[in-house]
Image (cartoon, rainbow, N blue to C red; front, side, top):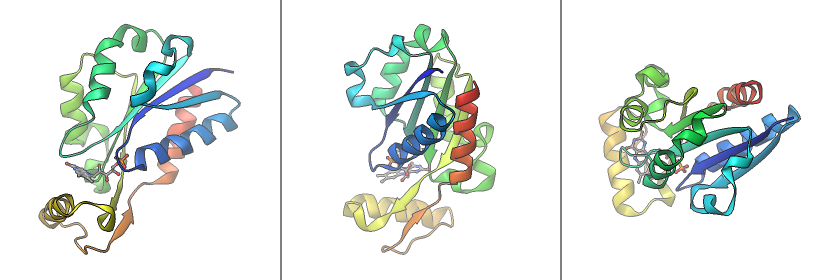
Length: 175
Ligand SMILES: Cc1cc2nc3c(=O)[nH]c(=O)nc-3n(C[C@H](O)[C@H](O)[C@H](O)COP(=O)(O)O)c2cc1C
């Protein structure tokens, strides 16, 4: 049995939901999982875990700066045990952008940080237009219009492939 830490950055809850599903899958493999938001990471001792997974969503092209800071301050710790990183964004709804090597946000992020995660994954996120502030709704609809995605302002669409999330859960349990 391993003690596994999953740290996440989520603005609207989709990355947290992915972490909760990962937790279920990994705990079914009899490991113990702690899921913590990056805002609360100071409340836990990351060094007391056997494996560390970090997940973050994209907002206007960037992952959370808190996640970037945590990674830069804890690179030796991350690299001293099995580790993984996953990104959540809506560009990944497109099959050709869903692979880590072809997802522009993930590639840019990996070039920016010094950590080389042992495993990297990209998940498609969710669009929830009614819950967005007007400017955000406008901007995301514009981006969707440019990339031939849904633009109905009432649309709530979860692009996340839960089978892919479960498969990653098995990878984490085994790594
Ligand atoms: C204000 C805002 C900006 C976003 N910017 C991007 C973006 O630049 N590229 C992208 O692929 N997805 C973008 N998204 C989509 C999010 O990555 C997606 O909704 C994801 O599920 C959010 O995860 P979270 O709920 O864990 O924050 C954006 C969403 C919002 C609300």
